[in-house]
Every structure is written in structure tokens, then in C-alpha cells.
Length: 60
Image 1 (tube, one colour):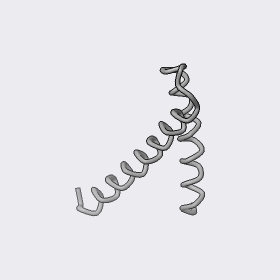
Image 2 (cartoon, rainbow, N blue to C red):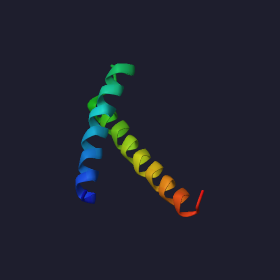
Image 3 (spheres, rainbow, N blue to C red):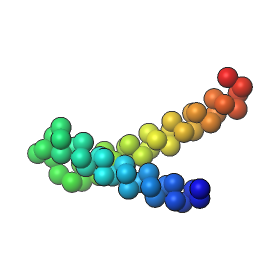
């Protein structure tokens, strides 16, 4: 798949789940906090992908 499509899917799903998680655990927080949580989720997804790829290059 194209890297732009993967980024778009991760961004949309990350924002959606971030807003849902924020509304579930902290209902008094706004949508902006949920969007921030979603961006953190997307960053974590890319971070884990990076570490998984670098681990495979070392032969482990």
C-alpha cells in the first residue's frame, strides 16, 4: 500500500479512537483533548513500527 494511504488510515482511526477513549474515561474533557490523544496514538503506532523494522534488520 502507498505510504500516504497508510498514514491517512492511521490518522483517521487514531483520531476516532482517541476521541472515543477520551469521552469514555474523561467525559469532561473536550474534543481537542481527544484529538491530542489520537495524535499520540498515531505517533506510538509509527514508533512501534520503526522499532519492529529496526529489530528485524539486526537479525533478531
